[in-house]
Length: 316
Image 1 (cartoon, rainbow, N blue to C red):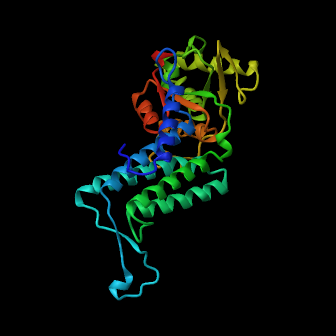
Image 2 (image 1 turned 30 degrees about the vertical axis):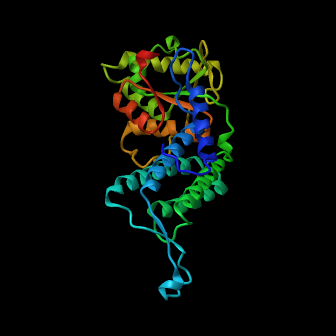
């Protein structure tokens, strides 16, 4: 990241925060945990800061002397954006993309907190106007940098005011049907030695019911279904019941609203419902770490693209 001259307290604060979260993610055996929702916000804010730093390096702001021009334009800012060089177009595109990704995540996380959602929307709109360099600038480019730094810090603090920012810090492993059919003996699953909760979503239950009628997958599907039925004897599966060792298992009864998830996930694609369900768990508790286990590489790739962890069943 290229840093401007001047006061860098906010950027240095961000860098220290990223260093700390990387240390938390690192495990004694060298493996890395998936990011929590709060850590994912830091990742997205970091991408935006880096993209904006590069954009500001190629941007120009000039002072417009209204008295010298002979025109009286009361609403016009004294500071105006210069023309962005043609070869800086990729930098503008990167800043747009970083802001879009941040908004997609933050707006979903803030749905249940109208006051925070409203504050984030206002910040998003102002940041969008500054990124597009439309209208007047807040001041010289160094003032622009500090102004935007302050807005990003306000964005961060707003996220930390969300009720979901104060959760249970759980580790959740959402299962895809492909993983269950390849590794149907759940009692033998092992993760990193930590406490994890294996989560069954409605989409997976429906798919298991279909697979038990297929000669090729009947035995594995029925084995998993029998285990799930046995979980009822251990307690409330909506709250979570013991599985084996430090693992627990939980069921989710309600399917995600596909109109309220990431825009590239489609309601007519069954695998996307699993990704959306995992994201919903993340947004409800931003302190949680959520991963998906799937044999299907496409599911794992989509999980990674969404910022979730991805685990191959062979690693369980």
